[in-house]
Length: 86
Image (cartoon, rainbow, N blue to C red):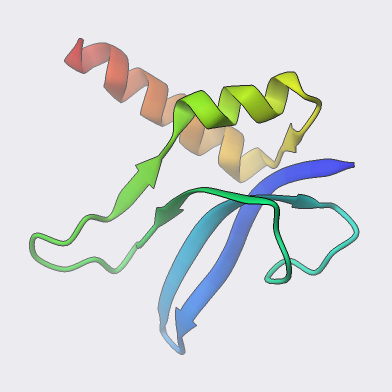
């Protein structure tokens, strides 16, 4: 089964998360199929803290991938922000 989840990267006390499509049997930070975006909770200054490709997210969901609870929550917030800008 395919899942859309966060994969942790970065250094100790400086996390960086990639939003990835992966096989559910693989380790959280292991091999993945596609990177859909990232989240950098400790982004400073003008650094980009978040990006998510909603078009690719919808593509994978339509092909049966199950988003994690955290990814669902983030995607809902991104959609709400995008709708407010339009």
